[in-house]
Image (cartoon, rainbow, N blue to C red; front, side):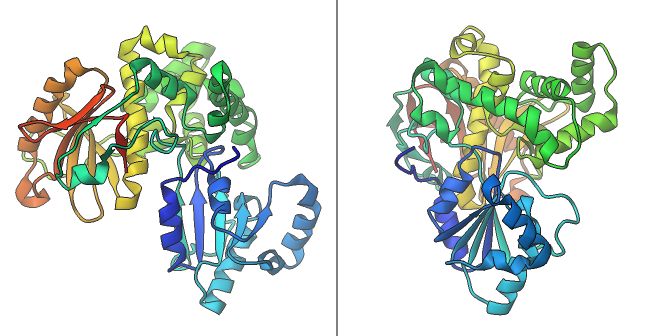
Length: 420
């Protein structure tokens, strides 16, 4: 990409470099970490460069502090390949007391015990995800999430059709797709999955894992996307594909590996105080970091989604969860969900760092907006507002063109209008 498209975390990077000595940007491969980090640094060490491996190995074994020599801020790309740099930076930050000296990027969590110190007080951390629709210029940004949270009036019209949104899901938020025309843009997510199961799941710790079984795990996660799928269900799905057993420890290892590679994330059950005596489900939802991983592993096209609107709805929810997480980062937001024993559910609960909260229902079509709005009002009555406070907003997030505020106060927002 010739021109850098600003990312929402750019503001967070600048802010944290002003008060911390070092910053770690983590996230899955191909989401744009290195490109973003380079906008904020003056020198770079690319640990994945094979031409310099011999030199890196020698420095690693003899004098790791040599890694730090260079103009600041200094970037260490894929730092987990030489974890010793972490402790070298920590000592330098301690000794100099200078701020904004180093940025590290990593697409995998390092092996346990590979660093001597947690980095508390020296390193700030940021989790980066693939692009939101606003960052990729698919959303026109007419409606700010922050304005919704603050109860302001909104209005907007999205130019995205249902076919456009299906295309965005299959394409994914991978920056590399924005330079690619026609059908080839859908190949990026498929190539990502192949690289993930053939290389990344082994190189992370040197443990050989069956690529086909890893694909089967991903297919199960894809089929059950945006639902609190149990490990028993995943095991059964894998068993049905291979006609053989997959042990619980093996499945745990596969899921933990995907988590370490930032491919899957947990959406926890809400911790709001609820008046209802109905038992609340506490199991987390496993979400893929980008919905295109689901369509890639299942080999689905945008047309396939249009012809299966039920599954399209689950993928749309995953897309919206991805974007809500990105948009709420500047607000120190936390995203959870609600579901009780009676199967009453709210798709997302957003709490900000300032203590505000709101509930969000995610619906693909206009025919579900009224039902979703009533669901949100019903949920509001379930919350013990004396303990949790009144909701700052109730919002139905949709794939429909129009954004507005209803007479009952519920916001209806098009994902094609939304920004941070």
